[in-house]
Amino acid sequence: MAAQHKVYRFRMEPTKTHAVFLGRMAGARRFIWNWALRRWKDYHAEHGKSISLAQLSAELTALKQQPETAWLNEIDSQALQQALKGLYGAFVNFFEKRARHPRFKSRKRDRARFRIPQRVKIQDGKVSVPKVGQVRIRQSQPVEGTTKSATFRRDARGHWFVTLTVCFELPDGPLLPPAADKVAGIDLGLIDFATLSDGSDPIKAPKFYRKGQRKLRTAQKALSRRKKGSKRKAKARGKVARIHQKIANQRCDFLHKLTTKLVHDHDGICIEDLNVKGLARTKLAKSFSDASMGEFRRQLEYKSLWNRKHLVVIGRFFPSSKLCNVCGALNDHLTLSDREWDCGCRAHHRRDFLAACNIRDEGLRILAVGQTERLNAQGASVRPGTSGRLASN
Image 1 (cartoon, rainbow, N blue to C red):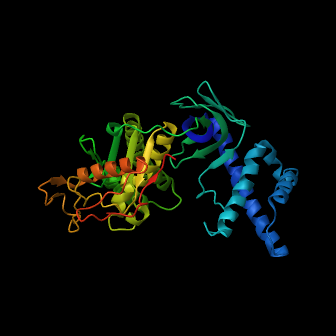
Image 2 (spheres, rainbow, N blue to C red):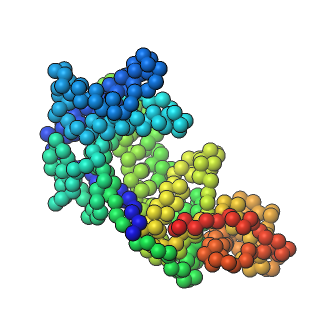
Image 3 (spheres, rainbow, N blue to C red):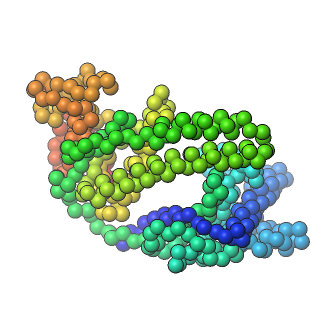
């Protein structure tokens, strides 16, 4: 059995008393982060090296005994220890050049959050939070597996959420080869978000950000006119946050429903390895970010793994739109504006549907171990032999 991790996220419905205690837990985390960061800098200035995590933990225990910081005893001890581990991880990322130097956290700018690795349980539609109590949640699905950690976070609108990391077991062993008629190729785009090789109607790009951009622009203009520090500015900031949250929720709902349906309806899915980061730097960056193609692939990967389905990722240099799937000829003169084209063998192709069919055929070839490379009209290989990979492995 192979261990896997699954994440559940539920919105909390705390009472006023619960909300005060949750805010105090988040404030204590921020206080310990700033205290540990200051202690880290002072120790490095005095000794020329970093203070160890064990010494910081011991000093935290002594800090809780001091009269002016005795209020830390009212906070869950594991939440405070996780703040130290979070700072230590931030320094590790900094030294390995994956992030910038850790900074002090501001009460106004830092989002309220804290993490507890143990003793958080979900039961009867409530989450048990140490030092806080039983808090009602909007539990949309049962939690299956062993809970490993819980993170509590308040969003820009003031809503609290709990995120649970759960460990569960997947059966070992190779996946059975899928039937050819249960394998689908998917071509992604900005006009049609997804075109499938099974001939079904293309899935139009929802463009949630583009549709909500007018309301967002109006709200942001109103926010910029408000006086800094005023209640009206805080109210305007909340309105902007609500619009952003609605766009994010719409996009998340669309992607989850689509990927779940695709995995449920097919035994194998073939997609292209798109350079999402590179596409996000082009003049169409806003449209590519709105489409969330990287998140679409991420969801397909873990849902295929959990459901024991095949996911084949085709190399990004595979000429899916230029390759005739009838005679194998390669159309090197095809441009992005050409949505349809005719081959010399008299075959008429719709660009996106052709790409989806070629992606499916290439995925089937990769799944069929030992099959020879596809050749073009001149008898030469159309791509290197290692352009694809099997994500289900």
